[in-house]
Image (cartoon, rainbow, N blue to C red):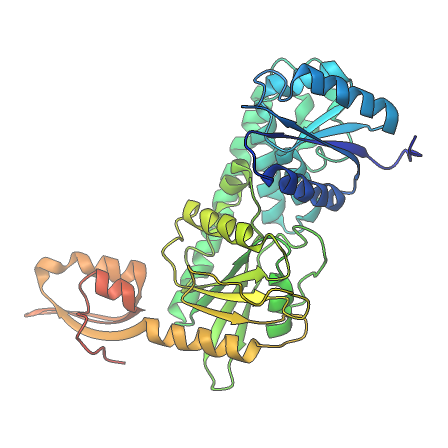
Length: 420
């Protein structure tokens, strides 16, 4: 019998494997990391091989009996399932085992609640929590089993005891507050566009070293910790190269497999920093044996955010401890091996980013026919409109724009030389 502390949650992790791959085992290893980040201790892992998850209880009756035996043996106080549970699955498991039942989504929401430090972050977390939990208030006899500890921390927890109408009202108010924050963020983005300083969005799997890289480059002072989702709120810092070229680096929330859609929706304005950037810097943990799967998750998430067509430069990080040297990212325009911790390779990385930005942005002067007046709106949307003059023979515009966008809008021909 494990000696139990009253202050610590001891949990059993559970997953369902529907094929012959070892993905479920790897996913449970990651779930254990998430559990550790949330402050709980994993005492056992259980995997059931099934054609599909049980619609009523997630796992079958025999496996529930096995978990019950483990609860008695280890003194576990909770069960965390590796997939998002339906309200019925959560209720039935709770009734069968009489312990706290959580799922991967609830655990990630709890970690986000711990990490949120700004007003925007707290609003986003509470909104995601309430949206997730509102559908789980129906038919739950004893929601007190979800009280306290991991999976229920944060500003949204007291609202679980109120009726659905109050929760809907609270969600509505939070969406209004978030819309105000979103508008402020868009004003900030517009200011960056007017300054003509290109923006580099740092993306990557959680704990890949994004914050360490930002700190090393700019001295941003962002929290660095060897835990998943160590930083939550985005940070933007100016960087000036040795040649005097200015660029903005923006750190973003780390991605993870099975990222809850409630979080994606609530954090969309934050995550969309990647969508509105000039270039994406993809930081990869080259020392992690799961790096290829992590890269896949990152690109899948970028597609969900509408940023799948952005130019990507990949930084294969942690070269100071990486064993494999043959890692490749076929999606990236360029790949550079670095160590954000030691600073190795950062000069080459900055040079690659600077070259790509300079090659991708063009300055154009053009006289548009009045029948093409709609293009002025496209220039405002995707570029920097510096001059707009309505003349007898057409509309004179002077603007800067990413080269690929100018080509796609017909504002620049492939063989045409832009004016800088």
